[in-house]
Image (cartoon, rainbow, N blue to C red; front, side, top):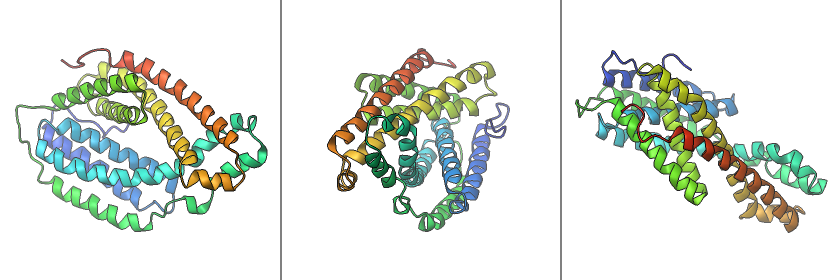
Length: 288
Protein backbone atom coordinates (compact mmCIF):
# COMPACT_ATOMS: atom_id res chain seq x y z
CA UNK A 1 0.00 0.00 0.00
CA UNK A 2 1.18 3.51 -0.79
CA UNK A 3 2.45 4.94 2.50
CA UNK A 4 1.12 8.41 1.64
CA UNK A 5 -2.40 7.10 1.02
CA UNK A 6 -3.44 7.31 4.63
CA UNK A 7 -4.68 9.89 7.09
CA UNK A 8 -2.44 10.56 10.06
CA UNK A 9 -4.52 10.57 13.28
CA UNK A 10 -2.35 13.18 15.00
CA UNK A 11 -2.92 15.80 12.27
CA UNK A 12 -5.87 18.04 11.47
CA UNK A 13 -8.30 15.90 9.52
CA UNK A 14 -9.31 18.52 6.95
CA UNK A 15 -5.67 19.24 6.13
CA UNK A 16 -4.94 15.52 5.83
CA UNK A 17 -7.93 15.06 3.53
CA UNK A 18 -6.68 17.89 1.33
CA UNK A 19 -3.12 16.51 1.29
CA UNK A 20 -4.18 13.03 0.23
CA UNK A 21 -6.61 14.41 -2.35
CA UNK A 22 -3.98 16.60 -3.99
CA UNK A 23 -1.53 13.67 -4.11
CA UNK A 24 -4.12 11.49 -5.87
CA UNK A 25 -5.17 14.30 -8.23
CA UNK A 26 -1.54 14.96 -9.14
CA UNK A 27 -1.06 11.28 -9.92
CA UNK A 28 -4.27 11.27 -11.95
CA UNK A 29 -3.00 14.22 -13.98
CA UNK A 30 0.23 12.35 -14.73
CA UNK A 31 -1.68 9.26 -15.83
CA UNK A 32 -3.96 11.22 -18.16
CA UNK A 33 -0.90 12.35 -20.13
CA UNK A 34 -0.01 8.67 -20.70
CA UNK A 35 -3.39 7.50 -21.99
CA UNK A 36 -2.16 7.25 -25.56
CA UNK A 37 1.29 5.77 -24.90
CA UNK A 38 0.35 3.24 -22.19
CA UNK A 39 -3.40 2.95 -22.47
CA UNK A 40 -4.35 -0.17 -20.51
CA UNK A 41 -2.13 0.48 -17.49
CA UNK A 42 -2.96 4.19 -17.39
CA UNK A 43 -6.70 3.55 -17.46
CA UNK A 44 -6.39 0.94 -14.70
CA UNK A 45 -4.38 3.26 -12.44
CA UNK A 46 -6.47 6.31 -13.31
CA UNK A 47 -9.67 4.52 -12.32
CA UNK A 48 -8.00 3.56 -9.06
CA UNK A 49 -7.13 7.22 -8.39
CA UNK A 50 -10.75 8.27 -8.86
CA UNK A 51 -12.02 5.46 -6.64
CA UNK A 52 -9.55 6.44 -3.94
CA UNK A 53 -10.61 10.07 -4.22
CA UNK A 54 -14.29 9.24 -3.93
CA UNK A 55 -13.60 6.97 -0.94
CA UNK A 56 -11.67 9.84 0.64
CA UNK A 57 -14.53 12.27 0.04
CA UNK A 58 -16.92 9.85 1.72
CA UNK A 59 -14.74 9.97 4.81
CA UNK A 60 -14.91 13.76 4.63
CA UNK A 61 -18.67 13.95 4.03
CA UNK A 62 -19.76 14.45 7.69
CA UNK A 63 -17.07 17.11 8.17
CA UNK A 64 -17.71 19.10 4.98
CA UNK A 65 -20.96 17.93 3.35
CA UNK A 66 -21.19 20.78 0.84
CA UNK A 67 -17.66 20.14 -0.40
CA UNK A 68 -18.50 16.45 -0.68
CA UNK A 69 -21.65 17.15 -2.70
CA UNK A 70 -19.85 19.38 -5.20
CA UNK A 71 -16.61 17.46 -5.61
CA UNK A 72 -18.12 13.98 -5.59
CA UNK A 73 -20.40 14.85 -8.51
CA UNK A 74 -17.47 16.20 -10.53
CA UNK A 75 -15.29 13.16 -9.77
CA UNK A 76 -18.16 10.79 -10.49
CA UNK A 77 -18.67 12.29 -13.94
CA UNK A 78 -14.94 12.07 -14.69
CA UNK A 79 -14.78 8.48 -13.46
CA UNK A 80 -17.70 7.49 -15.69
CA UNK A 81 -15.88 8.75 -18.76
CA UNK A 82 -12.86 6.64 -17.89
CA UNK A 83 -15.00 3.62 -17.01
CA UNK A 84 -16.73 3.81 -20.40
CA UNK A 85 -13.34 3.34 -22.08
CA UNK A 86 -12.40 0.52 -19.75
CA UNK A 87 -15.73 -1.27 -20.31
CA UNK A 88 -15.10 -1.39 -24.06
CA UNK A 89 -11.54 -2.63 -23.62
CA UNK A 90 -12.61 -5.21 -21.02
CA UNK A 91 -14.81 -7.12 -23.48
CA UNK A 92 -11.75 -8.62 -25.18
CA UNK A 93 -10.28 -9.55 -21.79
CA UNK A 94 -13.53 -11.20 -20.73
CA UNK A 95 -13.69 -13.22 -23.94
CA UNK A 96 -10.10 -14.36 -23.37
CA UNK A 97 -11.04 -15.55 -19.87
CA UNK A 98 -13.75 -17.89 -21.21
CA UNK A 99 -12.21 -18.78 -24.58
CA UNK A 100 -10.71 -22.15 -23.60
CA UNK A 101 -13.95 -23.48 -22.14
CA UNK A 102 -15.94 -22.03 -25.02
CA UNK A 103 -13.63 -23.67 -27.58
CA UNK A 104 -14.83 -27.16 -26.65
CA UNK A 105 -18.49 -26.18 -27.00
CA UNK A 106 -18.73 -24.27 -30.29
CA UNK A 107 -17.26 -24.54 -33.84
CA UNK A 108 -13.88 -22.90 -34.48
CA UNK A 109 -15.20 -20.52 -37.14
CA UNK A 110 -17.88 -19.20 -34.83
CA UNK A 111 -15.36 -18.84 -32.01
CA UNK A 112 -13.15 -16.83 -34.37
CA UNK A 113 -16.11 -14.60 -35.26
CA UNK A 114 -16.77 -13.77 -31.61
CA UNK A 115 -13.08 -13.14 -31.00
CA UNK A 116 -12.78 -10.80 -33.99
CA UNK A 117 -15.75 -8.74 -32.81
CA UNK A 118 -13.82 -7.69 -29.72
CA UNK A 119 -10.38 -7.36 -31.29
CA UNK A 120 -11.20 -4.94 -34.11
CA UNK A 121 -9.33 -1.61 -33.87
CA UNK A 122 -12.64 0.28 -34.18
CA UNK A 123 -13.93 -1.41 -31.02
CA UNK A 124 -11.55 0.73 -28.97
CA UNK A 125 -12.39 4.25 -27.87
CA UNK A 126 -10.24 7.19 -28.96
CA UNK A 127 -8.95 9.06 -25.90
CA UNK A 128 -7.45 12.08 -27.68
CA UNK A 129 -10.35 14.45 -27.05
CA UNK A 130 -10.78 13.23 -23.49
CA UNK A 131 -7.30 14.13 -22.28
CA UNK A 132 -7.51 17.93 -22.47
CA UNK A 133 -10.88 17.95 -20.72
CA UNK A 134 -9.70 15.70 -17.88
CA UNK A 135 -6.51 17.68 -17.36
CA UNK A 136 -8.49 20.90 -17.08
CA UNK A 137 -10.99 19.42 -14.62
CA UNK A 138 -8.30 17.82 -12.46
CA UNK A 139 -6.42 21.11 -12.19
CA UNK A 140 -9.65 22.92 -11.28
CA UNK A 141 -10.26 20.44 -8.46
CA UNK A 142 -6.71 20.95 -7.16
CA UNK A 143 -7.29 24.71 -7.20
CA UNK A 144 -10.61 24.42 -5.35
CA UNK A 145 -9.09 22.18 -2.69
CA UNK A 146 -7.31 25.20 -1.18
CA UNK A 147 -10.74 26.41 -0.05
CA UNK A 148 -11.87 23.15 1.53
CA UNK A 149 -12.75 23.89 5.14
CA UNK A 150 -14.56 21.98 7.90
CA UNK A 151 -18.26 22.79 8.16
CA UNK A 152 -19.00 20.57 11.17
CA UNK A 153 -16.02 20.55 13.53
CA UNK A 154 -17.73 18.09 15.89
CA UNK A 155 -17.66 15.40 13.17
CA UNK A 156 -14.72 13.19 12.16
CA UNK A 157 -13.57 10.77 9.48
CA UNK A 158 -14.76 7.94 11.72
CA UNK A 159 -18.32 9.13 11.09
CA UNK A 160 -17.66 8.93 7.36
CA UNK A 161 -16.13 5.48 7.69
CA UNK A 162 -19.11 4.12 9.63
CA UNK A 163 -21.57 5.61 7.14
CA UNK A 164 -19.79 3.92 4.23
CA UNK A 165 -19.71 0.66 6.18
CA UNK A 166 -23.47 0.79 6.78
CA UNK A 167 -24.05 1.51 3.09
CA UNK A 168 -21.90 -1.50 2.22
CA UNK A 169 -24.02 -3.73 4.46
CA UNK A 170 -27.28 -2.43 3.01
CA UNK A 171 -26.13 -2.78 -0.58
CA UNK A 172 -24.90 -6.33 0.15
CA UNK A 173 -28.30 -7.35 1.51
CA UNK A 174 -30.02 -5.89 -1.53
CA UNK A 175 -27.60 -7.67 -3.89
CA UNK A 176 -28.03 -10.97 -2.04
CA UNK A 177 -31.80 -10.74 -2.27
CA UNK A 178 -32.09 -9.79 -5.95
CA UNK A 179 -28.84 -10.96 -7.59
CA UNK A 180 -29.61 -8.15 -10.07
CA UNK A 181 -26.62 -6.77 -11.98
CA UNK A 182 -27.20 -3.12 -10.93
CA UNK A 183 -27.43 -4.13 -7.25
CA UNK A 184 -24.28 -6.26 -7.46
CA UNK A 185 -22.45 -3.42 -9.18
CA UNK A 186 -23.60 -0.96 -6.50
CA UNK A 187 -22.40 -3.30 -3.77
CA UNK A 188 -19.02 -3.60 -5.47
CA UNK A 189 -18.63 0.20 -5.47
CA UNK A 190 -19.31 0.38 -1.73
CA UNK A 191 -16.92 -2.51 -1.03
CA UNK A 192 -14.24 -0.62 -2.96
CA UNK A 193 -14.89 2.52 -0.93
CA UNK A 194 -14.69 0.49 2.28
CA UNK A 195 -11.44 -1.13 1.16
CA UNK A 196 -9.82 2.20 0.36
CA UNK A 197 -11.08 3.73 3.60
CA UNK A 198 -9.48 0.88 5.55
CA UNK A 199 -6.22 1.84 3.83
CA UNK A 200 -6.75 5.51 4.64
CA UNK A 201 -7.47 4.84 8.32
CA UNK A 202 -4.82 2.17 8.87
CA UNK A 203 -3.10 4.34 11.49
CA UNK A 204 -6.31 4.73 13.50
CA UNK A 205 -6.65 1.02 14.31
CA UNK A 206 -4.03 -0.98 12.44
CA UNK A 207 -5.13 -4.47 13.47
CA UNK A 208 -8.78 -3.94 12.57
CA UNK A 209 -8.11 -2.14 9.29
CA UNK A 210 -5.38 -4.47 8.05
CA UNK A 211 -7.52 -7.54 8.76
CA UNK A 212 -10.21 -6.19 6.43
CA UNK A 213 -8.03 -5.30 3.43
CA UNK A 214 -7.54 -8.75 1.93
CA UNK A 215 -11.16 -9.99 2.12
CA UNK A 216 -12.54 -6.65 0.88
CA UNK A 217 -10.17 -6.74 -2.09
CA UNK A 218 -11.19 -10.32 -2.95
CA UNK A 219 -14.88 -9.47 -2.80
CA UNK A 220 -14.39 -6.43 -5.03
CA UNK A 221 -12.32 -8.47 -7.50
CA UNK A 222 -14.95 -11.19 -7.81
CA UNK A 223 -17.71 -8.65 -8.23
CA UNK A 224 -15.61 -6.88 -10.85
CA UNK A 225 -15.23 -10.08 -12.86
CA UNK A 226 -18.96 -10.66 -12.46
CA UNK A 227 -19.73 -7.20 -13.85
CA UNK A 228 -17.41 -7.75 -16.81
CA UNK A 229 -19.27 -10.95 -17.65
CA UNK A 230 -22.57 -9.08 -17.43
CA UNK A 231 -21.27 -6.50 -19.90
CA UNK A 232 -20.09 -9.29 -22.21
CA UNK A 233 -23.50 -10.99 -22.15
CA UNK A 234 -25.15 -7.66 -22.94
CA UNK A 235 -22.73 -7.03 -25.82
CA UNK A 236 -23.52 -10.31 -27.59
CA UNK A 237 -27.27 -10.46 -26.91
CA UNK A 238 -28.32 -6.88 -27.73
CA UNK A 239 -28.00 -4.73 -30.83
CA UNK A 240 -25.82 -4.02 -32.67
CA UNK A 241 -23.57 -6.81 -31.33
CA UNK A 242 -26.07 -9.60 -31.80
CA UNK A 243 -26.74 -8.70 -35.45
CA UNK A 244 -23.02 -8.39 -36.18
CA UNK A 245 -22.37 -11.86 -34.81
CA UNK A 246 -25.30 -13.40 -36.67
CA UNK A 247 -24.08 -11.85 -39.93
CA UNK A 248 -20.63 -13.30 -39.20
CA UNK A 249 -22.11 -16.79 -39.02
CA UNK A 250 -22.57 -17.20 -35.27
CA UNK A 251 -25.66 -19.33 -34.68
CA UNK A 252 -28.34 -18.75 -32.08
CA UNK A 253 -27.30 -22.04 -30.48
CA UNK A 254 -23.73 -20.79 -30.09
CA UNK A 255 -24.95 -17.56 -28.53
CA UNK A 256 -27.09 -19.53 -26.06
CA UNK A 257 -24.12 -21.72 -25.11
CA UNK A 258 -21.91 -18.67 -24.65
CA UNK A 259 -24.46 -16.94 -22.44
CA UNK A 260 -24.99 -20.12 -20.41
CA UNK A 261 -21.25 -20.43 -19.76
CA UNK A 262 -21.05 -16.78 -18.67
CA UNK A 263 -24.04 -17.12 -16.37
CA UNK A 264 -22.61 -20.21 -14.68
CA UNK A 265 -19.38 -18.35 -14.03
CA UNK A 266 -21.30 -15.34 -12.74
CA UNK A 267 -23.21 -17.52 -10.31
CA UNK A 268 -19.98 -18.94 -8.88
CA UNK A 269 -18.42 -15.48 -8.52
CA UNK A 270 -21.50 -13.99 -6.87
CA UNK A 271 -21.87 -16.91 -4.46
CA UNK A 272 -18.22 -16.63 -3.40
CA UNK A 273 -18.44 -12.85 -3.00
CA UNK A 274 -21.62 -13.05 -0.91
CA UNK A 275 -20.16 -15.78 1.29
CA UNK A 276 -17.14 -13.60 2.10
CA UNK A 277 -19.28 -10.49 2.34
CA UNK A 278 -21.56 -11.94 4.99
CA UNK A 279 -18.51 -12.56 7.16
CA UNK A 280 -16.84 -9.21 6.49
CA UNK A 281 -19.99 -7.14 7.05
CA UNK A 282 -21.59 -9.20 9.82
CA UNK A 283 -21.20 -6.51 12.53
CA UNK A 284 -23.39 -3.41 12.70
CA UNK A 285 -20.35 -1.21 13.42
CA UNK A 286 -16.56 -1.49 13.21
CA UNK A 287 -15.01 1.35 15.20
CA UNK A 288 -17.89 2.08 17.58
